[in-house]
Length: 233
Length: 239
Image (cartoon, rainbow over all chains, first blue to last red; front, side):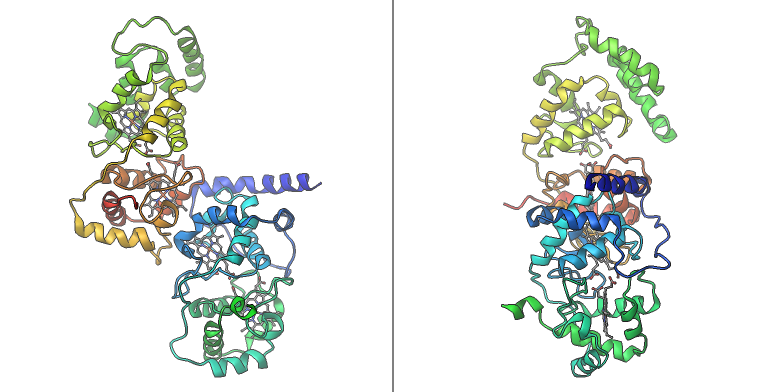
């Protein structure tokens, strides 16, 4: 049964190889009528397979050119920090980027099959969840964390993203703490406008009433929170 | 004459055939364009493996030492080619070398010179040739354009964020020493490196298994390609 599922996945992905060979002409992105957390066959298969961090470290080599060797990304936030992100979130994002649901033309050719095989996705996700970033993340231009903190709790962001910005692994809600300010700013905008493709509808509502300065304050607050893994210790 | 063929571009493989024929008329059928007759003609040629009549280039498999004399003419005996267009083969991963040789043979990778040469080499020799060049020590190189190389360092180490070119170091390592998945680059001849990047960009070379190098090169302009090639030649393997 699972074998069949796998072969269906592989069969579905085969035409993409041809696209990858011609490279960098992105297909049409975003999926109209996206149902939050709808399981794609690929995601089901990746979750079933699990992951091996040692293999994941090797497979991640093809990602280091942008996300850096310690998965810290770049301070300006063009490339997000991936270290410590929940395995479930990483798998959701990677499979949805591969499926063309989440828009990411810069990265797609490097994560698409066959650049990354289905079996490697879980490996990478497990590895990234454990890896420690050596470099500091990018913060906002001025400390607005007091205002940001108020907004974060007043708008119930914490119900999904946690009291310490630690997200929720079981529900695939992302970690936000210690993420780059620039990346947080961009994603809030992309989620609000729907350009990201795969957002939670309640999150879209929560963010809709935010002004530019509200976004700046929340992003700054979150970027100044410590890595949630250091709190658990 | 060689130059004319180059400029025509589409006749790359024909030159290969010509070079092949100069040495050995029979196996040149390997490189011919029409696929069906080529395989038919090639099969008896290898099977029969007739007693060598041309002493310079006998048919069939050759002992490694003798075959290396052919390669040495262009790649140097130790694989550290001094001809700018020809790659250094020294220290390249054996599997990478093996696949390149097979791809030249099958036509998945083409080059007016190497495609002709490979017609003379029996597939059974590839493994030993790959192992031999893998064991050679990569020589160090120098750049004649240090200013360009300095710009290239930035691209190699950090990539180009604006056009989403990932850092080369991410895959090929900071010192260019590579891995079993990503080939060694340190000390490589800059003319060869720039040629390859331009070929990946145009699609003239498309045997990179995951098409990742085509994606990388398509995001680069010629000035960036020249710069990174000048930096790569200066890379020395970290101890």
